[in-house]
Amino acid sequence: MCRVSGTRLTTLTTCLIGFWLCVSVHTSADDWPMLGRDGSRNSVSPEKNPPIVWSVEQLDKDRPIRAARGVRWSMPLGSETYSSPVVAGGFVWIGTNDDRKPLSGSMPNSVLKCFRVTDGDQVYEYNSPWLGTVNYDAGWTGLGSSPLVEGDRLWFTTNRSEVLCLDIGPLSRGEGMPRELWKLDFVKEFNSYPRVPLMGPPRPCSIGVSLFRHFETTVAEVR
Image (cartoon, rainbow, N blue to C red):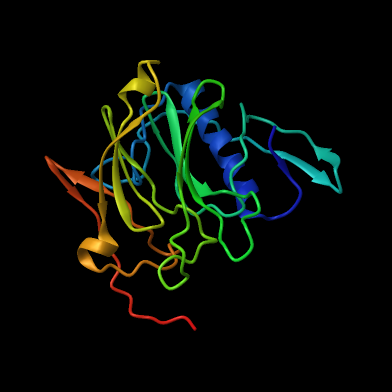
């Protein structure tokens, strides 16, 4: 059960995932496979009669002061979450960071997590290590990209400015884990300068047979 004892972004995002799934399950909602719902980027849902009353459990110094309502399940994310969740084929995908304490002088890994819609169980996780320098990877922001799902293919951008394509067919069919089909490193190939994915983390978009992804041209130096 999700609990709120402060205003941490992680807790609020976790609660929103649980609420979204509650909506999806109870109203038989269509998939939401990318940021903006579909290629139109029109985030207005066509669903009818959505739930309008919901709340997460609230605590005051670990003492419950309000019970949860309308939330089917919740699962923890990292300490920072800037990605928007997508729902496709019975799974929820969202980027975050690894909240386990990193080694001295390092930063948390970025993580793409996958949860099952029906019960919230985590069924897959992709880890993307810190790039090793804050000049290119701030580290604490995690994986800010929202994935794009079409059929058995999933695309997303890592904290390392890599575009990955995963075959998620084995996961969908219950035959195994997703497998990497290809990876394009924008730092090596295009001299991209990724930094902090707060206002506009790279989010793939497809039109026909083409895949589009913006990349950073920031010029900065951190001393």
